Amino acid sequence: MDWVALRLSLELAGLTVLLLLPIGVVLGRALAYRVFAGKVLVEALVALPLVLPPTVFGYYLLVAFGAASPLGQLWQTLFGRTLVFSFEGLLLASVIFNLPFAVQPIQRAFETIPSDLRAAAACCGMPPWRAVLRIELPLAWPGIVTALVLSFAHTLGEFGIVLMVGGAIPGETETIAIAIYDRVQAFDDAAAARMALVLLLFSLATITVTFLASRRIGRRLG
Image (tube, rainbow, N blue to C red; front, side, top):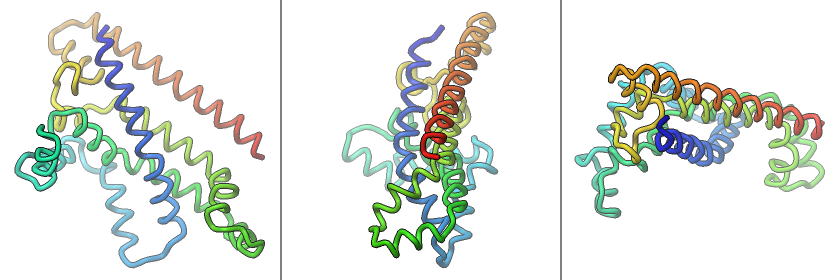
């Protein structure tokens, strides 16, 4: 069992979810409530990772993060290392690739909140930020939990983006999915089976515990 690869996968998934949570809430709420020019285009761009093959999406990210790109050159200047084939680049790619899994469930959750509730809160003199914290976020909680679970689980099992942007550097970018693939390529079926089983059980336990917690909090808020 490659515990280093598993730890790296969990760290990547956890940081991805942590970064996506505020992005998903802000962007999902804006897409749910606001009408603006180009909204359809923004929604299409957010959903793009759902339809593009991971290797194709990963190729464009590889070009965007590469040493010849403005972002790659800026990163090299600031930190003295390349963005591609690094954990930081892998994390940034993971956040971008998981945008639809975070934004869309949260957007749908905000869309189900009756506009009368927000209007009533405004009539009662409640500041907009307090209405978001006290009314909207609790009501959108199921969508937020769904977004977190989907993003976490999808990051754990992601292969194409990891391979294209991160490569397979042990201890740096070799996630559990890459480690399983390497074991299969080496005809080490026993090791691959053990890692696949651990990943399966861990993912199932994480999703189950999260859904149970979501239901308990939902009943408490109700």
